[in-house]
Amino acid sequence: MPYSEVNVTIFQQLRNIVGGAYIHDSATQKAIYGKDKTEDLVFLPEVVVLPKNTAEISQIMQLCYQENIPVTPRGAGTGLAGGALPVCGGLVLSLERLNRILELDEANLQVTTEPGVITEVLQNEVAARGLYYPPDPASRGSAFIGGNVATNAGGPRAVKYGVVKDYVLNLEVVLADGSIIWTAANTLKNSTGYNLTQLMVGSEGTLGIITKIVLKLIPAPSHSLLMLVSFSSAMKACAAVSAIFRVGIVPSCLEFMERQAIDLAKNYLQDKTIQVKENTAAQLIIEVDGNHLDSLYEDCEKINQVLETFDCDEVLFADDEATKNSLWKLRRNLNYAVKDYSAVKKADTVVPRAALPQLLEGIHHIGQKHGIRAVNYGHAGDGNLHVTLLKEDLSEAHWNREMPLAMLAIFELVAHLKGTISGEHGIGWIQKEYLKLVFSPIEISLMRAIKTSFDSKNILNPNKIFN
Image 1 (tube, rainbow, N blue to C red):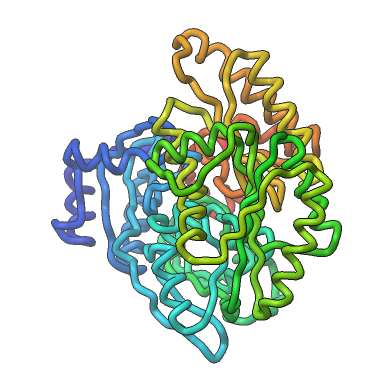
Image 2: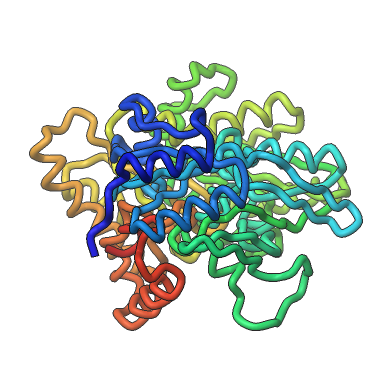
């Protein structure tokens, strides 16, 4: 069944639900809400609505379900896989006004929040009470917690603390027909029926619209130590990663940055505080945290002993906050720096961490074969490498011909290494053609059936994950 257009009557009904100030159909507003941080893609919606609560979202979905209008839920628009792009037009439903932290339950170490709260704001609020919400994607200063849940975001500290799914206890969700459900209970254990909570986490707005989130918290660690380690060989930097874990140490962060990425970020930030030697090919950022400094220094000493066997160069210990902040600012701006430098195509690859050297070597061979330079960085501690192909001054003909072949070859390599094609960015709009590399037809068919059972009219974020 073809989708319906947002006609004058429907527009007025939407206006009655949210109020005139919170519905937009101007060319300027549609252009703003028609893109996210995915490359330079833009898909214009017919209308943008900004509801303020669950009840309004329920009314909007009832109307869109009845009239067969596609709805694209949107958080802060920081996604990198096109998950918030309204590729079928219709209605963009922005969750930016659902921006309250509703309850901080210190006794049970839980927080209940609306989806439009900025992740870093939430982290700072719980930190003021001595509590900790560890998942910290690079965009945490602008991304919404709801978008993090929708993509099962991770970040540097996932290696020790896990990703978003490990902290979500319960969700309030509006379904495609406007029904409102809670997916579980606010308990640490739950073996009651199917796990609807974990099904919603990472579903990218294709199964329902998340309107309230109950998160588990943990006590905040008292101390952290940060090491910046330089290598003359990027392959040896990658090989050192799994060796650190094999001696029984689990860092709170273990990040990999190739030299090209470091230089681009330093230029982008105009940062002269961190000096990089001429022979440095790659760096690892290694953080350990806990409540006993002596133990953390022992861990750093053990890590240093491991690194020496991989011919590392200098090791910088960043034990003051200014140096730590400078290093993390550099790391968190890598994505923005690379995109500012050139048109790009990105891949969010994950392999077993011991396979990182093979992945890195293979990516560069593929890049050379297709005449495209690749820049790599990412969360090496959990095998998550962000691959960026750079267009630079390549002709449009060369880029359009060779880039898709290079991307396919990279994902085929990932599958061969028993990895997968997205670690934290999701599948969204741009990765769906590669899903068949890591899932069988039976597995994809099961996923399609789940989508249909939640959204029989296919109006919720259509053409994402699947065609």
